[in-house]
Image (cartoon, rainbow, N blue to C red; front, top):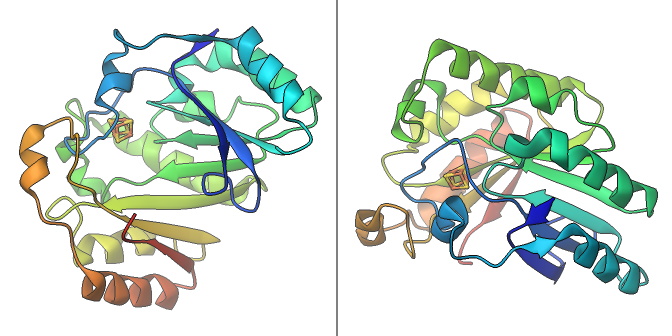
Length: 231
Ligand code: SF4
């Protein structure tokens, strides 16, 4: 399998680990604020062969302890991805999967995943803003993925990029109602740069006061809240 991006070493993508990040191409959502325009399309990116990634992981095993599989949406390639994950696991690495949770049936089949980070885009009734073909079955998959992750015994976090209008304070409250008692919910400030829909480059991100209030709402629901503001 090929990957379409590699961060060789990061301290911020896998909690408490120095990790490499591997990117798959393509996505089943079309968030207008997405920064991964090139990755979604994937045509102009030189792929990395998995063998080359293994060579890197072998060389850097004294420094790295985690591998993040990110996208796009990695579960679009669940069957091809699983043997890669097995191999990374067998090398002694912890594996984190980033997902948008739409492919519930594939998510629950994955093995050797040590951490799941699921993006919750907004409250469920507003998913049509990021998902062009939003149906009842997509809705149910998102709900099932949230429930599965919370009960799986696998370490996890939920996270939301807080884009004005797509995510309001009311949406934060609704999401917290759905994930009440979750371990961790991270809120990231939107960056108006290189967006899939260029008009989002004119959107002004929420400021500190929004995030302070949002954090209070999250914590009132019994959830640890991490703010990623000012990146
Ligand atoms: S932000 Fe994430 S889920 Fe949304 S289109 Fe981009 S890669 Fe897909």
